[in-house]
Image (cartoon, rainbow, N blue to C red; front, side):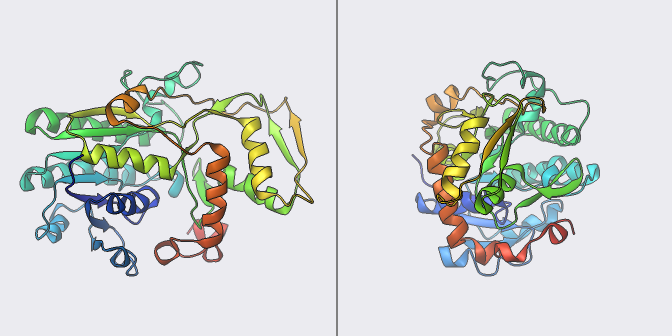
Length: 341
């Protein structure tokens, strides 16, 4: 595996922060950049230089001119789950910003980009009951809070594809559902409204020993990928000699709703007073999401290690130790009101 210098954009965010640290640990030279004016000295403690870069402003990339960069891992951009609905911001920070990134790469002669797309580009296949291939025809959901997001991501990917063919930039487009990780902020936006993330809500109830009801069909499954497995794909892509393409990121085994609830109670409830689990088949079913990641296994040698229980146990350790507090603060710094501001 070739070791080189990786610029991680969006380095103060969920995926970017863990990816930057994992790349550094794997032996890559890492340069971190984010929109925050300061990272509180967090990355310096890990031997990583940090720059404040606004990816929507092409001139802002000039701050990086002193750095020798071989790969760009672009995890920057707004998420529907992290802000009230603002379609202009989605287009600006995803599509237009990706064009800025690509122009910066051409100017500097950088020949590889790692970019996360959205599984909603294949929303029409979500309920097919079959694993979704990495190279299926992309589309977008015509309605809903992920519609404009998918449009913005698709346009960004189309630009990346053009620059691949026009300038020889290799590209690793990563598709995945939720990447699970501990973050002190347990809240997000759904349909433009702030609320606690569903799995964090379940963890909270389990910690308090409150009853939990399983809605709909408990046998429906989903991909549940842990951040420490996701970063393995980023590392493999950064060192790959291939031209790249589209890669699905899945979990070692799909997790049923029933398995998920019982696992959360096992890990987070007091054994002396565990949450009671009941079932309500009349409630709507959850989304069943299944990805075919055989291509990722074959080309990037991806072998995820964290099954659901192992993931939850490590999640609990990070919840207690808060290793990213220097960058993100602590759980006590967040509430539903603060997260919506």
